[in-house]
Image (cartoon, rainbow, N blue to C red):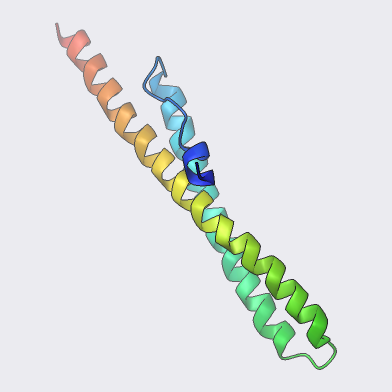
Length: 105
């Protein structure tokens, strides 16, 4: 089992209201955006730190190791969040169509 699977195991389709699905979609979309902004900021920091003469090579190597481990996980988290948003949006559209169908009867 991977972290990705742990994050997307939520069962949206079992009784989730349209408002709940909308909230899940919104929160996960925002989380993906925030993660991507953070990754870009890390890239900027790494670029400028590498250009500094006051940044010891051993410290840089340790920091790069830590960042590599984190970024390896962030890819899975971002993918899971993106898929969760898509799942919520899909189930929300189904729920809205069903509600319109019931209202039209």
